[in-house]
Image: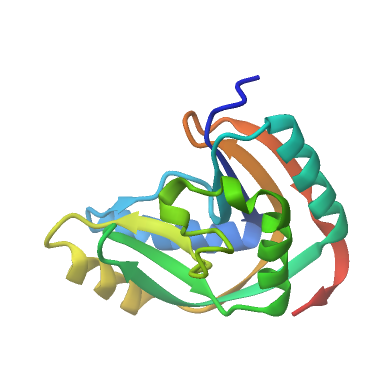
Length: 182
């Protein structure tokens, strides 16, 4: 196992929420906009230079201590510097606590992407990337979303670790069944 590859910890969603996201992506694709190829997810952290086995054990323990979370995706936005469009949820204590717990041990290894996901960076923006826009496509992208996006609720069901280098799944951990915590 390669201990120096870049690893991504993400949260993934229930099938119904994924269907909603794929519908939005298809509308964007029909307009000639490049859609994100990854499954719908929220990134909690991107880590470099750590022991994979240790991270797997840590995230497994975190998943065993956290319940599934209902998340309302109620708005969309655009990161102009990266030319990325995203769906964003209402922040909730449960989502922020999960993010914080994930970073309790390995925040110092969360250096990829300019620390966008770290606690020390103090600027995590929970979001789900859905598309990238070429110059001149911004208006078409945002108009398509304006006309087609409706808020929806997703259930965060898993924590998943993937290799950022190859997109290979390294570990999948189910969050605990619950009486929903909002």
